[in-house]
Image 1: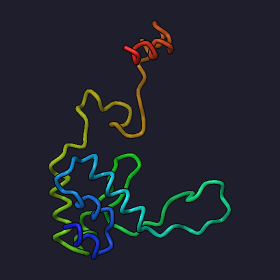
Image 2: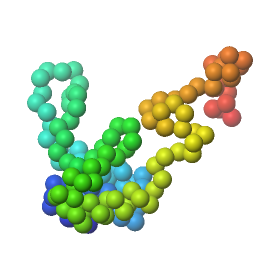
Image 3: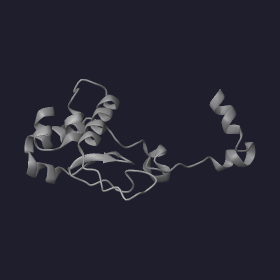
Length: 133
């Protein structure tokens, strides 16, 4: 399956299937690596950080800074139905959403919800003690 994704220019997908028996964490490491190795970088305009801003999107399965994966099934089907089906099957095996009781503050997006009652009664420094425990 890795070669199929490579042949259609979907390098993030190729990385996902590079080690199909590896853990999801390893597979996500491979996909991002292969994606970054193969993307077109934007023109450098003297910014202090490079690349700066949004990368040029060339694929229908790729990295998303908040949700790990961004996947446009219909568009990927236009490139290759078998590859799209393999990706869809892979993602269907995992539950990417936290339990409802942990979904406050953006459903595990890029937000957090501090325990204000604890901060008010114990102080913000109390978190350090909890971490050390």
